Length: 241
Length: 262
Image (cartoon, rainbow over all chains, first blue to last red):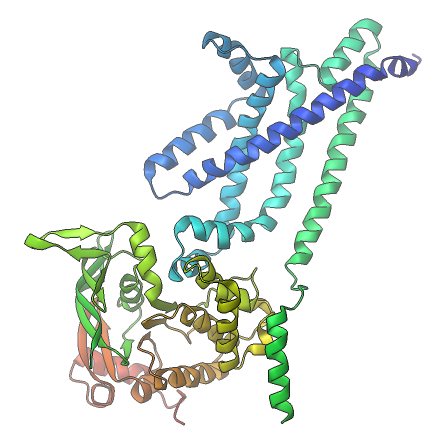
C-alpha cells in the first residue's frame, strides 16, 4: 500500500474550512457553556433545596447521556417544537449546554475548595452573599479553576467531531467528504487527527501560560502602593530618630 | 453607663441539639466582657448569633436602639428582617475570627479597605488613608503591601482586628482570638487587645485565657451547656466562683503559665 498525501494537498481548502468551523464552534460553545455554568454552579451551592434540585437535574441529565444522543435530541427535537435553526447553530447550542454541565461541576468544586472562613469574613464586614462570592471567593477560585477547565475544554473541542453526524461541515465532516471522493481513509483521517492535535495542543500550551502567570500573580510581586510608601517613609524616619 | 448591646432570651439549636438556651445579657458602652466556658458550651455560637453570621432560632439582639434579625412588633408579633437589612447592620459589630480568615489574594491594605470601599461605598483615598493610620497605630505600616502569607500569626490577627475596626463598629466581637496562635505570640496579641480595651472600645471576647479575663474584663460570663451559668465582675467571679461547674472548670484550666501579668 502506498500513501498518497497529494490528496490532502488537492483538498486543503476543505480541511482549512473544516478547521475554521471547528475552531469557531468550539470557541463559542465553550464560551457560552462556561457562562451558562456559573448560574448552574451557584444554584448547586444554594441553600434552597429547589434550586439545588433544578441544577442537579440539569447536570445529571446532560452529563449522563452520550453527547451524540444529546445532539440527535436537539437536531430532531427542535423542529418538533417549531424551532428551525441551521445545523451549525443547533450543534453549537447542544455543545454549549453539554459543556456547561461539566464546567458547573468544575466551578462547584473550586468554590467548595475555598475555606468557609473566607466567605464568613466577607459577611462579617457587611458583604452580601453575592458580593462575597464576587469580591472574595471568585478571585480565589481562578487558580483552582484553570487546570480542570483546560481539561474539560479539550474534551469539548474533540466533541465537536460528533457534529459531523448532523452535517455540520467541521473537520471530521470534511474528512468524510474527502474520503468519500478519494477512497483514501488513512491519509484523510491522519490529517484530521493532526488538525485536532494542533488545535488542542496549541490551546493547552496557551492555557498553561495563563496558569503560570496566575501562579506568579499570587506570589506578591505587586507594586507598592504610593500611599503605603508615604507612610513607610514616616516609619523609617521615626526609627532613625 | 449606657447600654450598648442587649441580648434577650436568645436560643439556637442545631437539629435536635440545643446550643443556646434562653441567653440574656447586656453590654454597656466601653465595657469589656469575657465569655468563658468548656468547649461545646455555645460560646462561639453565641457570638455568631449576636452578629447573625448564624441566625438564632429565638430571642432578640439589640444594638444601641436597633434590632438585628428578629424584631418585636406590636401585639407580640415578631418580624424577621430581610437578609439585606441584616447584611447592612452586621458590620456595626466587628468580628474577629480564631483562624483570622484574612483574604490571601489581597494585600494587607486591601484586606482592610475592601469592606469600607465596597460595603460603605466610601471614597478609596479616604479609606486608604484611614487604613494606613490604623496600620501605623498597630505597628504594621511597613506590611501594608505584604500579602497575608508573609505575616506572622500575631501580625495576621492584628490585621484582622484592623479590618474589623476599619468599618468603625460600635462593638467588637472576638471569637477565641488567640487559640490559633503559637504560645509566645499569644501574649503579644493579648497585650495588644488590652491596649484596645483601654482605648475605650467595647469588646465581647470568647477566650480561654483566664488571666487575661481577670486583668482586662469588666465582667465575665460563664457559659455551660448553652446557659449563662454564672455572671459577674471578673475578679470576684474568677476568685470566688459560686457555681460548682465554674469552680471545676477554673481548677482545670487556670495554670500559672498564662500570660498578660504585666
